[in-house]
Image 1 (spheres, helix red, strand yellow):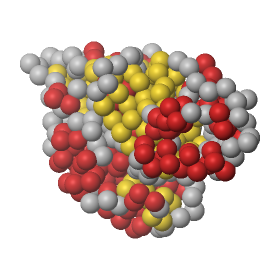
Image 2: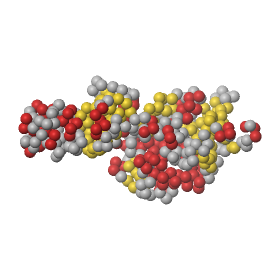
Image 3: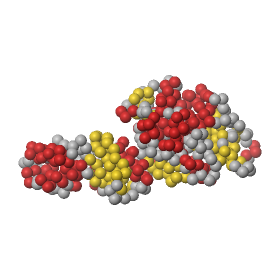
Length: 424
């Protein structure tokens, strides 16, 4: 049956029409190469269209050193790629393509329209202008490898649809990780790479919510807090990560910007035997907070203790803090001793939660882990085990904090591959 199908040939095949794959395709096509993109979905950038709650944090406008500091997952491997095409190159690319951007808190860069679909459509239009051929509904089944020589070389791909084959001397795997699998990120790239001898660093969900052992956590679901300090420790008390900012309680645990960034460190410990401490009042020392409580208790000294925290805490948090402090909510404020008041202050400064796991891949923003970086040429992103095979984006074992840094990696690695592809 395969003999009857036409042999479709080109200079460069890209598997995956996400940000890394499409930018690689555009870059190569602008250099005069014939490019085919194979996408299992019916659109470009399906996952991209839902990032940032539908707003798409394209990149970050920080300096290069700060950029590197925000990529804890093998950032040094990305040095060449980021020098080739950094965060400002990403901004310039979209500006040149007609997409206006705005800068927000923390250097985050968003489309001025606040619509992630506009980012995806811009990439689609630029691909069309560059002459890239995008074929939708194409599920790649396997890579075609020429291993007659001493060194393996990729020569094409076979698709599940009628076992149609596409041939090219250069192939990029930009299939993403395993997060948001409904968008097509199902870990296919790992399978193909592993068959060729590549090592896969165990994929784990990252930039994800953390689940807690405490059953009462569901009582706080939906409660959002600002200006709190979140610290993650192992069970010996060693600090793994700490951050200041916004967080959110969920039905099973905690989420929000400062929690998401901590999740990669939790993942390094398989989300086991971890404790988090929340400081609800980081601007106040323990002594200053105790003084504040004293003033509030004097103000409400004839009321029940449950009515004495309204000036200090959100109403939903009050009964939990009272319980964790070992107080009876019906006790009168004037009966509270100095020792008990001090216990309340300590609870507010070190609110303890036990981590039991993480949100699943379906809810994780990115994947930590992937194809081992030591088996990829950092300057070209070509496989060291198979000639003509390239990797870009989340399929590689690289990851960053929230704030536009992961999309920066995608665009940077995609550009690097597209700029290094050569006609055979």
